[in-house]
Every structure is written in C-alpha cells, then in structure tokens.
Length: 474
Ligand code: HEM
Image (cartoon, rainbow, N blue to C red; front, top):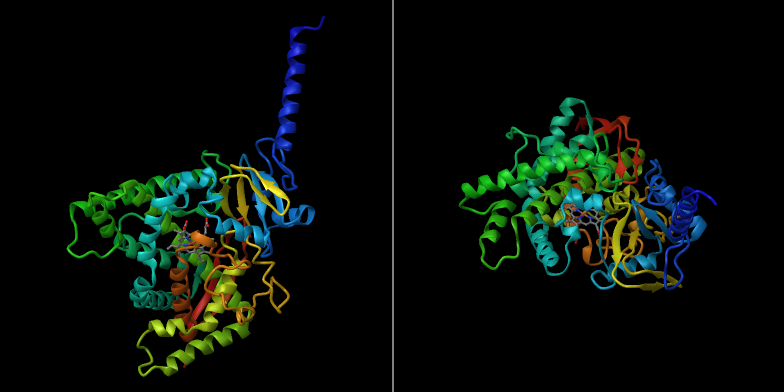
C-alpha cells in the first residue's frame, strides 16, 4: 500500500499534465493557425515585451512569421491570441467591425483608459461619441484651429532657438498637450497650479503591459496617473458647472450642455473617460511622429531640401509673406503629406490593433474560434508594394504614385482601418504640416544627443532627441 500522499501526488501530476496539454493545444472546431502558446498563464508575454531597437517588423512577430507564416497563434497577458500580418485578413477584420469582430483591448488598457473609453464602446454609444469627436476634430474645426497651431509652433520654435539645445520629444509633447488641453478644457499649463501632463508619463509602456499593479511597474504608474488626472478633470468640470460660460468655447461647455439635455445618452463618467483618452491620444502620438520626422529629416538632406522648397514656394506665392497658412495652402502641401505618411509608416507608433472574434471565423484554411482575441499587426513596414524596394528606407517619394495617401489601405494602416479609423488623423496632419512649415522656412537644426528608438513594443525615445535649433540667416 502506498501512502495517500503518493496517490495525491500522482493525481496532481496528471491534472497538471492535462492542463498543460490543453493549454498548449486549445480546443477548436477546425484548424487553428500554427504557433506556440508558450508557458501556462505567462504564454509568450515576456518575448513579446522584450525591448528592441528595430524599425522593421517587431522581432517577436518577424521570427514567428518566418516559422509559421503570416497568421499564427500565441498567448499574451493570459489570453490566447491570433496574430495577423496577413493583409487580406487584416482588411477583412477591419471591414467586419461590429459583425464578426469588435474592438477589444487587454485589461491593462481598459483599466488605464477607463471601462467606458471610446475603444471599448460599441453600437449606438460608440457612434454617438465618434460623432462628438469628429465635430471637435473635423475639417470645419481644424480650419479654425490653423492659426492657433501656427502661432503655437512659431512661439515654441522661437523659444527653443533661444535655449540652444532642446529635447524635441519632450518639447513637442508639451506644445501639443497645451494645444489640445486648451481646445478641450481651456487648460493653461502656465497658469495652472497643478501639472496635468505629468500624470501621463509611462503610458506607452503601461498600456499593453503585464497587469502587475505594484509600485515600480509601468502599469502601476499609469493607474496612479489616471487617478490623479481624472480627479483634476472632474474638479475642472465641476468648477465649470458652477460657473458656466456665456459662449460655448471648448469641449467642457459642449459636454455640460449635452449633460443637461433630458434625452441625452451621455454620462459624466463617459465624458471624462473620453476627455482623458483624447488628451493622451493626441499629444503622445503626434509628438512621437514629429520627433521621428525631425530625426528622419536630419538623416535625409534631399528630403529636407524638397520639403523646404515646397514651403518656401507657398510663402513666395503670397501677397503678404507672413500672412499665415490658409486652408488652401495647407491642402496644397503634397510633398509634406508624403513625408508625414512615410514618417508614420516607419515610426509604427501603434504596433498592434486589438479585436475580438464575435463568432467562429474561417479564413485561408484556418479557424479563429469565437471569443479569441486577434492582434492586427501593420504589415506596412514590409508590404508597401512600390518600385522603391527597401522597406526600411525613409523614402517619401514612394508615396508619389499613390492615390490613397489620405486613408487606410491594405498596406498602410498606421492610423488603423475600417470603421475605427483614427479620428485624430487630420488633427495630427494639420499639426505636423503646420509645424514643419514653420520649422523648415525659418529654422535649421542639428542633432546633438539621443534620438535612439526603443520599442517595448510601443515606440519610445528613452534618451529623448536633443537638437540645436537656430534661426536661418537671410
Ligand atoms: C501619429 C498620430 C496618430 C496615430 C499613429 C494614431 C493611430 C491610431 C490607430 C492605429 C487607431 C485605431 C485603433 C483601433 O482600431 O483599435 C486610432 C484610433 C483612435 N485615435 Fe489615433 N492616432 C494618432 C493620433 C490621434 C490623435 C491626435 C487623436 C486625438 C484627437 C487620436 C484619437 C484616436 C481615437 C479617439 C481613436 C479611437 C477611434 C475609434 O475607436 O473609432 N489619435 N489611432
């Protein structure tokens, strides 16, 4: 007779083996894409977050593409996930939003951005919010913003040129945050006793991270930042409620008016979550894009030359040289848009777009089980079919013959695709184009320090990008 503990031990080993087997071989009614589910619970999370400095497809994805093909399975932060780098499947997923797939983000993301953030809402409520944002950042609104963006760019560039050396990443982040915060909530960082922006540090690392809420982790920092920022936003909204303005001038006024309507679907919590998302989404992404653009331009003098010529020509055509950028001038900046597209293509600021399968999907012989998450990876870096071969080369001319430079396409999805195509695309383009206009016509700059990128997998400039900016002599 063996002691009871022996039987218990055997039973435990059998249970763990079955569990391990089931983990590695998830159930499916068809053929799951190839790939490894990694270790139980941990999956392949550590490999996924392992930092890299490449501008190519992330090594995690590239290695597996080589081994398994463009569609593979894995497990990240405790969830089975299908990774798609297949242009056809990506396109299908975007087109099927709300039918076969819906927007879904890991818990870390929803805890930080709020459970009612725009990316996690669906159906009617989503459409309502999207319209609100489109009103705010749509063409009519952007036309009015043009002078503000130009003044802010000129003001900041002048200041930076007197400082000598500036960290472009930090300085553009502050500039864009100030612009957006003014538009949304009339926040003025120079007049406010509290620094709203400092609550958004560590977000890029924390958004899609391991959900460990303990001091020292990026996730913990993000949650603390969220708490403080939400408290500030709530207080500001309350103050505005007590002292309403006569003329509606910012997003707070608009929200308060909406909240007073009897038939409204908007709640204060949803409005605050939206404000929080917009504040973050606008400054972090655009400042990364501007920093990348300035770095690429330093390394590619021919691109800088053509860009400068485009902007100098705009000024030459004016009756009054410093009369300010008009909407028509903005729309005419053809080469600038090519530079912007090429910058966001290579910067790959959003390295993965998440969705959930609402039903079982069969695609190219594989089955994606209902309920599984899907990570759509931009194949943009690799699959831009063009006569310019090297996809890692910064080459705005590759966009010359393309008619779809304004929207998403099968091969370019830096701003997403389908129904959830980024609502801030035009806002970003206005800010980048106008900033570049002011920069290249009046200033020259030289890289001094930093500028190295790190992806975890979100893009970062861990040591910033320090440049010496000075006025051009003419
Ligand atoms: C270089 C700049 C930017 C990049 C690369 C970028 C990228 C993206 C991507 C890839 C998506 C799709 C996410 C998905 O499908 O789940 C998205 C959605 C979104 N973006 Fe941007 N974005 C940028 C700038 C902005 C700005 C300036 C704003 C703020 C005004 C903004 C606000 C949003 C919002 C609210 C969504 C969610 C839209 C939805 O769910 O329908 N983005 N962005």
